[in-house]
Amino acid sequence: MSAASNKSAPMPGLWHPLRGRTFRNLLLADLVSDIGTFMQNVGAAWLMVSFNAGHLYVALVQTASALPFFVFVLPAGALGDIVDRRKLILVTQLWMTVIAALLAVLTIGQLVSPLLLLALTFALSAGDAFETPAWRAILPELVANEDLAPAAALNGIEFNLARAVGPALAGLLIAAAGVGTTFAINAVSFLGVIVVIARWRRPTSPLKGTAERIGQATVAAIRYVWYSPRVRVVPMRSGTTMFFASGLTALLPSVARSINGSPLTYGALVGCFGAGAVIGAVLMRQLKQHASSEQIVSGAVILFGLNTIAIGLSHNLPVLCLSVFLAGTGWIIFISTFSVLLLTNAPTWVRARVMAVAMLAFFGGVAAGSAVWGAMATKMGLHTALLCSGAGAVLSTALGLFLHLPGDAIDLTPWVHWRAAAIEGGVLAASDSGPVLVAVEYEVSPEHEEQFLKAVRDYERIRRRDGAYQWRIFQDLENPIRYVELFLVVSWGEHLRQHDRVTRADQEVIEQVRLLSRKPPTVRHFIDPKQKS
Image 1 (cartoon, rainbow, N blue to C red):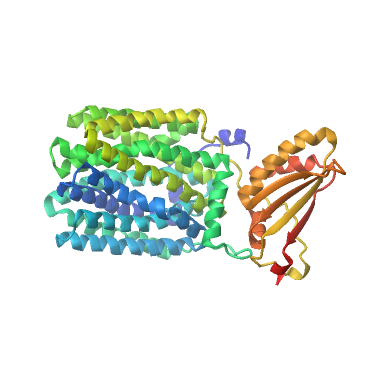
Image 2 (image 1 turned 180 degrees about the vertical axis):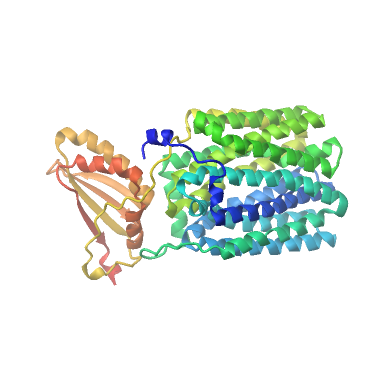
């Protein structure tokens, strides 16, 4: 579909995806689960504050939550594309239920120390890290393509409604019944998601060739992102943004304590952040109709940064609530935009892994930023740390000058255009033997040489993105119109997968290379003879 037709087509309404029963039930179950998660987060942060462990330990609670994504998210993304995503989500939900219940028991029994709290927070977040790439990748399986943007917006509204409600409930419960109650409610909150996912009958696709191994799949993810300029820019921008933005979210418990030391104040501030994010999610549809992704992200990051600065300068609770509300509005706008850009620029076969690479950058920024701003708050003061993180967030928008975010969506429909290799007796049809050398011969007229070399260099990016680990183009010295393109793939199974990874968006480059050849290219495949048996 052309860009013009995309602009003329009416956008689906915000509530349109709710027609799907599974999506609707999962959204409601996830709302309950996320409310429990935010109660858990508030409880953990406030428990650390109650230990009088200092700003650094308070900020390290967010580091412990973010670090598992940095450590585990790449293999988690590979698993999300290799195994049944439904089963993976069920296992991780059960893991988080057990860890949350253990934390509740230990807290109620007054057996938790600062280090044990950080360790259990890490373990709980590890389950989330293994689940999240698969969780985000199933969204296109639950709704139609045209409903993807409103479904992502609804997820944002759900998440931030939970952010608004959960902390407020946590503040009340902590004041009335203690921190352990919030951890117990979080353990119970996972059950709804478990029931909905267990009842979901996910359609499965037949496996073509051999299944990828986790190591190969992880390498394929990094390779795909590196050789996809439209995808690569998103984690680079989001990681940098989150390094600075993490200052506010990591130090908000300390801000609340500096006012009056009440858990109700912290719950109110986090609730204001979530309420602002709900408003931001509602505004997303209107913003997309009038501005580009780059303009939306830059404006939202500036809004967030300026309000972080305002929080660093203010000691007045009403002013803080307003600034936190506006910061939450900016937060969800740039987070949702990054997420939709990834979903619309990654094909199905690698979607969970692309989300994993993006989360590696995202949570790497959060983990590093939380530690840096916590240390700065300890050494130089809370308000200085907030001023610096807010100013850094505003300045980070300058990256848009040379790391510009992608615009219109592209057609990621598979475009199978290669002929199947005529392998004698099908010896390697389902084999992981390799490496495989592929040679493609072209005949190019002298007047088209410059155009051909430019086009084939663009083709190199596609070859490498989809599986080639080496690539070269050679010209025959004895017959200058003859060119040979050579590339190596790690195995025959991986080469077969290359056939399914080319998309309609690549068609223009590939056809340009073919049109500049005087006759159809000749393709040959080579392998070490010892690998055939």
